[in-house]
Amino acid sequence: MNNTRMVYFEENDILHLSVSNEPEAGSVELSPNVTAELNEQGELIGIEIINASSFIRDSILESVQAKLLNMVDNRAVEQGVIS
Image (cartoon, rainbow, N blue to C red; front, side, top):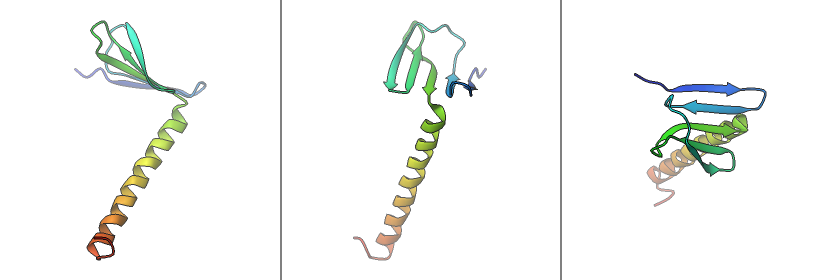
C-alpha cells in the first residue's frame, strides 16, 4: 500500500511530502528551506519545503537549462564544432 501524500499550504508556501504515517522522531536540515523528517529508526518519512513555489520554480529551471545545454553541446559535437 502506498502512503505517499503531498500537501501544499498556500498561506505559508510550504509543501509537505509524506511517505509514511509513522510519527516523526527527528529531522535533518538538508538545505536552508528543505527538511527531511525521520522516524525512530532514522528512516525518511517526510520532506518539508519552505518557500516551495520558489524552490520548485528554481529546480525546474535548473533542470531544463542543464538539459538544453547538454542538447546544444551534443549538437555541437555532432557537427564537429566541439571535439
